[in-house]
Image (cartoon, rainbow, N blue to C red; front, side):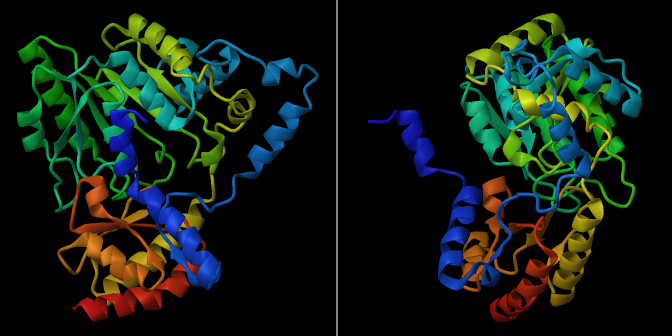
Amino acid sequence: MISIKMQEQVQNSSVIRAMFEEGKRLAKIYGAENVFDFSLGNPNAKPPQEVKTAILEVLESDNLMSIHGYMNNSGYEDVRDAIAKSINDKFGTAFTQNNILMTVGAAGGLNVIFKTLLNPKDEVITFAPFFGEYRNYVKNYEGELVIVSPNTVDFQPNLEEFKEKVTPKTKAVIINSPNNPTGVIYSEETIIKLSEILREKQKEFGTDIYLVSDEPYRELAYDSAQVPYLSKYYANTIIGYSFSKSLSLPGERIGYLVISDQAADCENIIAAANIANRILGFVNAPSLFQRVVAKCLDAKVDLDTYNRNRELLYNALVAYGYQCIKPEGAFYLFVKTPIENDVEFCNLAKQKNILIVSGAAFGCPGYVRIAYCVAYRTIENALPGFKALIEEVQ
């Protein structure tokens, strides 16, 4: 029999993944062209040409063991050095390779840092709506996820409630900007206020509180919007990055952690994270794609692909009578449901072969997430169904 903990996990498996699997089932029945799957944040924009070029260049290397062999658990030194220099050039920081740890995507990085930081019953605070897997990542290490209720006016973090929820047991705060599921970018004003509260609470409780910034969507920002780089605002910052979205490589599982020298106990955190990377079973990040991404640090996907989808879907849904804020980044719309029960609304949408995800999965019932990282024609073909849906429920 499986463990009690995993019995609970099986019973409460990812709603997003379940909807994704449902889409595949419906596609076999009705044809893929007649099923409109907006469930999973699976990029449809092609990787930049630089990625293919880099793969071929790396594979033509004479020393194949430098491509496929083991390396330092933190990753290849020259790759980490290149990433540190790229960050410094973009954000005016002063990182070195010692501050970079290559990880198996952002998810692997978050598990590494929580393994490194958390004792049983330590608290990790996050702001609703939030990526639902945070629950599991924190629970993996017997931590407690503390959720700040959503500010549904503009989806900036609810800092008044946050201030009340920081306790002596608070070990970390995790934020995600541009945000999944809202597409909101947390403003510099928000980050400054958040940092001030954390410094006040550290002084009040005599503790160290780490701000963990989950940044897989950093490069996906529209209309020249700026995403603040958090280590410039708060010393105890740890940044998790992924190339899954910026280079359209989610299946390659490649990312990194940035652990600042300014963070409290940074030397031990870096050493422990290096070990956590190994003992969690990752051993090291994928060797080939460490080499590849080091050659593609200035490359980006064609953001116009997503922006075109954003404009079409947002403008059409608002015209039909749906309520949502226009996303500033990522590739999601977070839409208020025209009926109170968001799960029921998702089921009604499924009857029209439209697959969307309940806001309850993100800690924000009464909304649904629509991932618009799909083909443009998928949105075009789905719009009559969205229109008919709101007309029926109203």
